[in-house]
Image (cartoon, rainbow, N blue to C red; front, side, top):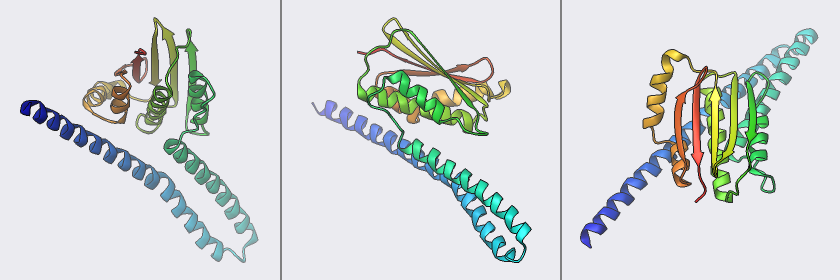
Length: 223
């Protein structure tokens, strides 16, 4: 009995350490995203305000400056919307799972940010709300990582329902062949939010060399 208690206590300690590590990684990712994208754009906007004061007597220069400010303001608004979607996805409870993923792909496209291509085949299975939410988050993170870390211009999201199993693939064209094997090894060893969410619903996520870049494949079979 004491041995079982110690084993359970050790497992809970290990699980807590893993969960804390994942939470720290999520916090760091959010902080980096806000700093690298939003804060820098806001700093540039402050620079414009300083130039406005110096251009008050120069109508032509003022007009050009206002056009630049408007463009940057739209970029800031886009960044805020993108970050808010990452934190609180626009999930549609009344829509089929594949329709939610299709809308996610459309929402993650943007001027200068690349294209997301979606396809779906097979007869859909019934998924619990929790499984759908986790799969949505996994897909969202894979697309985000493809654009941010792989510098991809195209991402393909494929859903295939076959043999009472869901196969979900996210493939990009951004990672060079010279580095992709090393990148895959790192991903396979890393315990991150993708691995955590996959394990939580009993799914398997794996990484492979795609036609041009990285291919992430997730397999899930309802219990």
